Amino acid sequence: MTGSAAEIVLKQACAQVGIPSADAEPLRLGENAIFRLPGRVVVRIGRAGQVGAARNEVAVSRWLAEVGVRAVEVLDEVAQPVEIDGAPVTFWHELPEHRHGTPREVATVLKRLHASPLPSAFELPPVAPFVRLVERIDGAATLSADDRAWLRHQLSRLREAFDGLPDGLPRAAIHGDAWAGNVVVAADGPILLDLERFSVGPPEWDLVSTAVRLSTFGTMTAEEYAGFVESYSHDVLEWDGFEVLRDIRELRVTCYAAQRATENPALRSEASLRVACLRGLRGERPWTDWKPLT
Image (cartoon, rainbow, N blue to C red; front, side, top):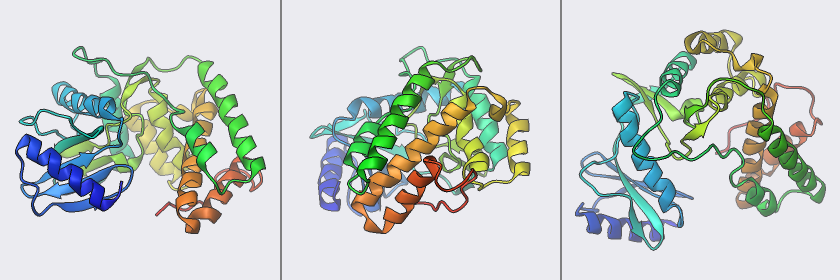
């Protein structure tokens, strides 16, 4: 979404709920646009057609408050989401001063989340680990025909493997995208961010987001990972289904890089590197030369 289009939606949504939009500050413009308003209010504008997902985020935020898992908080005085030309608009309290969570802190909040009873006022969707992957593979113009065919085959293989996962931890409410950046810590404790992927599924899906930092990317130490395992009281690396979920996570971040490279030529070498690693052309894990996408 362009800046001008997002500003139009912002003004219309704010007018509808009676919140002034003057002096709005854009924080992020992209698939989702985020603005800060005076009074420590943050407005998120989602993609057109995602009203149901936004409604789920609002419900999840309120449910988490009920079960004692702190997360980003919606403005309760506003009926939301607001829909403007098919795009959902939601209103949130701005976060207090915070830092990223440590592996131990991430594990602690995930353990509390996974032990919480499922919501009764609404139904969480089943986990969807392959969402948008077909579109990203097909739309990545920088992929060679050979790489595209390999990624499609890998996606098909992993779909089948996911359906046959071995037994593990009891199914629970899961965050769905529980990497370290989505758990921040304020002065009074950890806060969960980005509730878009909340669902019901294997808790291991959340745990793998941290495990791959050790096994795939080499961005955390064995000592840090040991602290994560100790705090959660379970090591997903020892589960027979770990490699399947690891491979799905790797595929997701690789397809995202391929999509971004189509939009930004500066990222083409990074996308090519990730595909080559997945195909076994760059040695064994960890692949420490992967770089964050900017």
